[in-house]
Image (tube, rainbow, N blue to C red; front, side):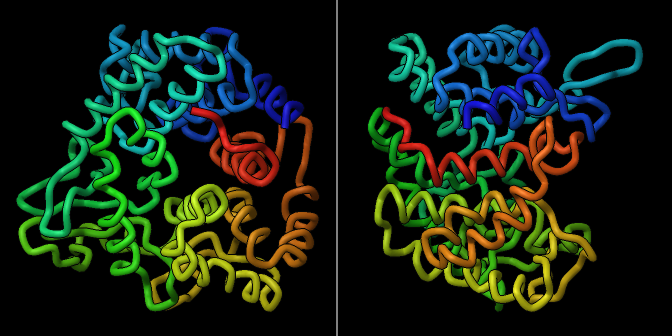
Length: 338
């Protein structure tokens, strides 16, 4: 884990703490910064944590560490700066969780105080009340005209269990999240990248014409498998088991087809002729919990077989690097202490 982290630093993190997404015009996202902060805290690398933290505050949070970060930064016409000031609640939660871990790992009470403030901001700006209870939106933009846009992969339930230790409100999100995940699952049992909820009635809505294709199981939704594995491994949550079975069944698809499609339709059809390394990384902990022998075989073929000097797979794909590392972290490292 240490070696792969050092490879990641060399390949993706500038000396000033900026994480570069080479595949997106060398831009930077709040998600990328938050992943780096989490990994640095989890592995115990305080110098890198502070470098990444400083860059995030200075460039995504306008110099205010208590502000929710803008989600995208990159090259503008004639300068570099914020490209989209909207928030992204997955990154905001990873950031808050990383700060809680850092507070314990590095013995810094300032990290704990900052995490508490950010958790309040997330709750006030990115959680909305619905007929099903409080629900986490994907950002401040996620509620329009009584319809909530939802992304189940943003529901970091394992982190909420740590958040509620410092802010009990976070426990209120757990039951609605499990209920909604069961309700919005495809006929295959896989969860969609995006779904839509009528706030007043609690009814799930079909995708609007402008949103067609966003309800497939693709580059967003595979991350749900990591959450389900964390919930089983760390909390022994029984509701995670039935939601996990369709992801375990993907091993049968792998055995039959030689790959798992990167994007799968609600009916189960492959929508891409290729697979995706990050998907295997995110699902590895769940597969090792449920079908360990097959997981080891797949790991050798799809993950260990793609190792390179920079990490796994294509060098420009920082997203896959993170999800493969997180897959190994959940498998091999102890749960971070809070």
